[in-house]
Amino acid sequence: MFSRTTRRVTSLRQLSLKSFNNASITVNLKEKTVSFDNVFLRDSCDSPDSVDASTRQKSFTTASITRNLEIAEPPKVVNENGEQNLLVKWKQGNKIHESRYLESFLQKSLSLKERFNGKFFPEEKVYWKKTDLVPNLSELKVDYNDYFAKDEVFQEVVNNLNKYGLSFIENVEDPQNDPKLGSIKTENEHLWPVAKLASRFGYIKKTFYGVLFDVKNEKNAKNIANTNVFLPLHMDLLYYESPPGLQLLHFIQNTTLGGENIFADSFAAAYSIRDRDPKAYEALKKVPITYHYNNNNEYYYYMRPLVVEDPYVKNFTTGEPQIKEVNYAPPFQGPFELNATTAEDPKLWQEFLRGLRLFEDFINDPQNQYEVKLPEGSCVIFDNRRVLHSRNQFSDSNGGDRWLMGTYVDGDSYRSKLRKVNETQ
Image 1 (spheres, rainbow, N blue to C red):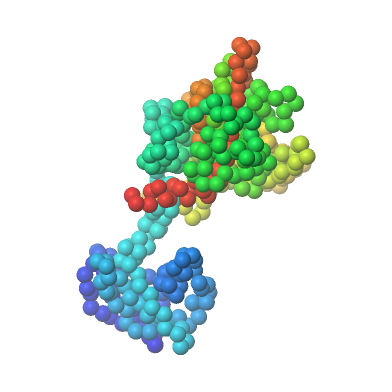
Image 2 (image 1 turned 180 degrees about the horizontal axis):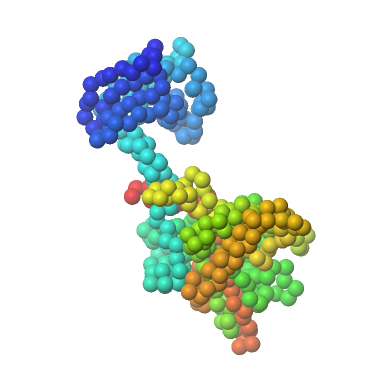
């Protein structure tokens, strides 16, 4: 048993033990001296006794290893398979547990930036205006067949969705030429091009629209998207507890007059408010907005603020929290639940309204938008928690048709692919 009195040991090479006690272990790691918390180390053990070799799932609880955790004997640095390991024997009561920590693991644990590397990619994001996006459009466009046949092309799409929130697939096969298709049915859902594109990210997120959905001009439509009137910038399904992460829209027919699509980066808008009016920005994080869908025998309802930050993922340079998601969908907005009669916090309410005006001024400025009439045979994929989408009014007076098919992918599936395609980089 070792007390908290530190034991001194002799240094070795890249990794060497400097001291240890029952609270921490201090090592020399390359040119740094670092103390690792003992509970952190024991909890991170991935030996077969700690993590099942088949399921890769943990076989103990964190709380259980905090009781009377001691170091049984002086830790050692050993060489195994060409890499140095820190060998620690832990003691709890009469039980001895052996852990090995690769030098690379210890190196990766040195800082928050190192620990998040390969899990989150905030520094790769580009918060764009029109002048930022248009010069890079060529890198956002890939061929449909290459998307499936070439892993590096799929990786490019995945990374561009993280970087810009947008990607465009060209030369998509025409489902009108497939005799097995015609209309969406359970037995043919997987055969539609948009379903094939989405499935490369993981499972498709089924909603009350189904696995896939048509976007056509309909009489007595139950959703503004199925009309020909102007559709303002918005995100989809914000009345869900967990809205989709990605949306895909395949342009099967698009020969009407008008109907151009408009995209805007809500993160760029939010960050501009943070820089320009910090109080308004803080209010946008605090005041909940109601989103609902009460139609067609369905009643969905959820409240969420316009801006949501991730308290754990920060800019590694400035230390500021990163925006996790923005929530904006005026067509599906319901009455505010707070501040209905007398504002509960009049100052906060006015700051929120000021922030909302600034947000709309930014996203509705054509200089901050990308407008395009996507050709038939193309598919746009966009981050539904970041990129706002809109559509101009259109007319079929020229005899043209407009038929889009869409689907959704969960953000978790997308982020899993983002990590995996970058795993070896």
